[in-house]
Image (cartoon, rainbow, N blue to C red):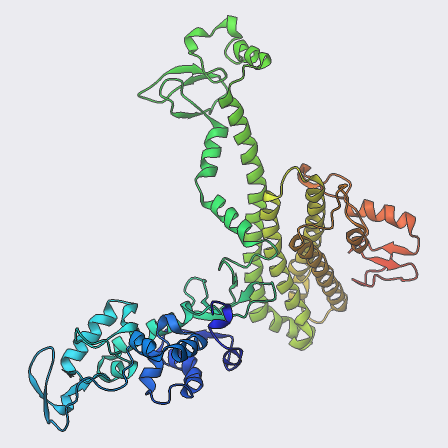
Length: 551
């Protein structure tokens, strides 16, 4: 009863018209759960519409749970949700009734009652309901105003006596209750988005896309981050926002004043430091000793023999060692963060370029090249691939930051796959961004446009393959690396290379071309394309992947 299937039956999910819907209106709320009323009719024939709705209030949106509880103990369910077998108070044919709140007599037409029969005038009902709705979502469990009565007040009563503004609030609360208590639906976390998304987990991929075009992870509701797991993303986001990096910067770039202990940053070349007022203590930056003890015998103004001697003798204090470690940690974090942030900004620019392409440039290019827009989809596909690859590449830097330093083989293999994927993406991005411009600015059809089509489509395919390999490897935990520190034959055969040399930024990256060359020396039946590095059969005169002529 606690499984995910409790929220809906499989047939219930299939009855939904769409995977996405917008919230915030009464119609949206009623339309979305109206399909469930028919399913419940077989079990609650004796209850009216409002009572059937009450049976799903809000922690019991699960139809199967209601069915199980109803047949196990009908009386307990009725008492819990305020469903009555019969009215508590009977009024017969009375023409006037006394309101239980204001105690005034009113004609029968100006009196409303819940299923219990307690009479209250329309004005008192309106005040009671408005106060409850303005108090928050608790109005979904509204009961009869009589203190001794637990009869439920349904939406039919709300619709009869509440003003329109309160009806809309109630409907929003009802819809929000349905979404937030349903394990298979969530609100889109994008700022300003009012859509909710339904998702049936089970495939292992938690990336979902809302109608507003925002992609997010169903599991943690952060931005879509495949192939990095939610735990890594949570740690990375916390690290980016926490004060720990500020402290690392202070430790790495400042020293405490020996007198007042405030952190001091060195902004000039001289080792003679003077603390800011009111302290004004003068000390040596190197050894933190009083400057009055320094002179020619300690090495002059730009060196401190006592510090150097202490360092050589091994009495270098723990604070200095911690400062050095903080500096190294900060440099490492900066390396990964800068690349993470750069790919994020590149992705945002690519999204803007994609929108510009779809709304303006495609139509213009269609007119210039005399080709229908349907034949220019390869450009849109390229930009969509760029946007997706930028997202994946961004999160691989968070993955790399938390990859253990001692796992050298995995780190080398990861940086090799990341480097090849990044290289392919840069070629694709440059082609889509730079090489398209001459055709947009041309006065008429160009003979080279078909060659451009072939190149861009080929680069899109090659880049997709690179990133599929990267995603697959990271999701498998880089399991293709064996215990001896080399990639397994399965991994190397798909790429025709094994990590062996140092590369970008001083952080081990394999040279793909050198490894391809060594492979080709052993296998003369293939040749490597200079453009995309695809291994073609020897008889081919053009690359089978990107159609680049053999050189």
